[in-house]
Amino acid sequence: QFRTHPFVTTADALRSPGIGRLDADWLIEPDVGAVDLDQVDELRRGAAALEGRLISDAARAFDDPAASSEFEVTTELTGLLAGTERSVTVTRSSVFGVVFQIALLAGYALMLTAAIAVETREGESKLLRSRGARPRDLGALAALEAACVAVPLALAAPFLAARALRLADEFGPLASIGLDLEPSPTSMSYLMAGIGAVVVVVVLVDPLVRGA
Image (cartoon, rainbow, N blue to C red; front, top):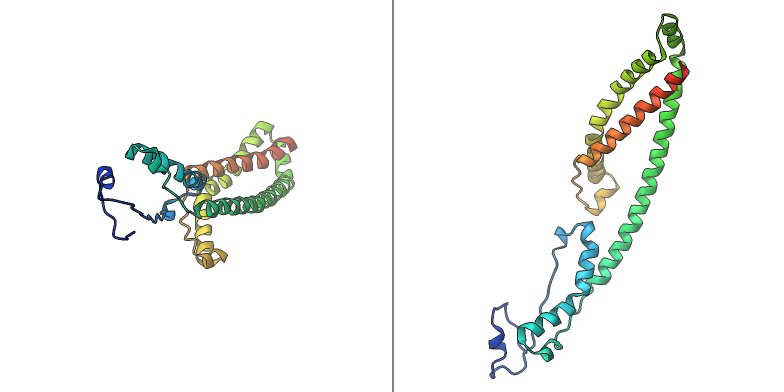
C-alpha cells in the first residue's frame, strides 16, 4: 500500500501482471457552499447510492465483476444531511408560525382601519349623497383613495422587506451565526405585494360602499 498525489492511469495498467494488490483511498469533499436547500435531499440520496454506483461502474470498467466487490464507501454525509433536513423542516415550521401570527395581526389592523375610515367618512358620504352622488360614485372615490395608499406600499414593500432582512442579518440575532443573507426583491415578492394591495383596496372600499 502506498500513498501519493492524484495520478491518471488506465484500467489495463492496473490489471498488468506487475501489479499485485493495489489499495487506493479517495477523500471526497463536497462543495457545500454551492448546495441549495432544495438540493439537500438529492445530495443525500446521491451519497447513499454512491457505493452501488461505484460497484457497477467498476464492473464495467474492469470487465471483472469480482473487482467491483473490493470497493467500500464510508461516509457520514447521509446522516449529516438527514439531520440538516430535519432542522430545516423545524425551522421552516417555526418561521411559518411567526409569519402566520404577523399576517393575522396585520389583517386585524386592516379591518380596524377600515372600520375607522367608514366612521370618519360617514358625514362626508351623507353630504355627497345629498348632492346627488350615487353609491357607485362613492365606491370609485373610495377605491381611488385606497389605491393611492396601496399601490406605493406594494411597490416599496419588497425593497423594505429585503432591507429589513439585511439589517437583521447584520445587527440582529442572525449576525452571530454568520448566515450572510443577500435578499433581493423577486417576481414572487412583487406578486405577493400586489395581492396584498388588492386585499387592502377591497377591505377599505367594501365597507364604504355598503355603508353608502
